[in-house]
Image 1 (spheres, rainbow, N blue to C red):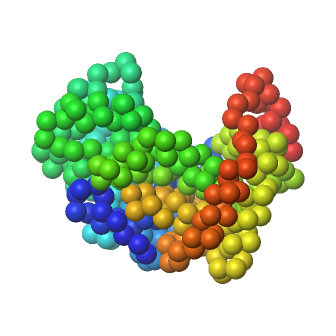
Image 2: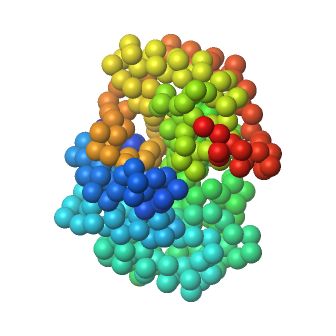
Length: 324
């Protein structure tokens, strides 16, 4: 496993983590396709393979994700770095403090290593939110402050209102297909030693090679994602084929190639989900090889030739959900 420093904190985090959005969420198939025992074993398998960064949120599964993560790490808390998030409707000063207490209780820990604002809220002053975050650090309830889904302008503003602490990370959507973070956020992070936490690093599973025009997903979350539109799946076939070819030559999987492409940047850590132990082991295996310069060049050339359709009419969504 590869490890990098989280911001300037001195904490060493694995470049492959575990994202826990899917835990407790029926929209992903919770209860029907997978359940608590599988994900607990998946988390522990990841830890056994060197993963030490686990990311969850109070909103995931209505708090169930935090509870299950807490049960998974109960006997091995010292081996992991826990990150969770406060929901944007809870960003007033008092509500941040209350939300943190609830997360501490659900996780069964005394301190949260990285406490993140899940989304910015334009209707609540960032000043009071960050005052609450600094109080939590001072009281020893959290160790470090992070943000999620903040633009560069919003990130800089949030840092400006802090008096003592530094924001150490920004969690954003980032994968081979969705690369908006490369415009401003990643150059800024690289220059200022801020960690970029990449969620949806496999584009919700699209980069695993499992899906295609003739094999579209059936779960709700993916069916409403424009990337899984039939036309986009056709346009992405050259990339999926390339990932399979590279994976075959390297004795890896397409998912491992896609994750390795992300963590070639030392300022980036990826947090793929893992519903089952085998998936957790596969994800961890993305960190034990390195793509060659030629492989990176061919990937970049292929990506430059792909144009993704990024909008879909809301009127089409029901038909897309019903389509087999």
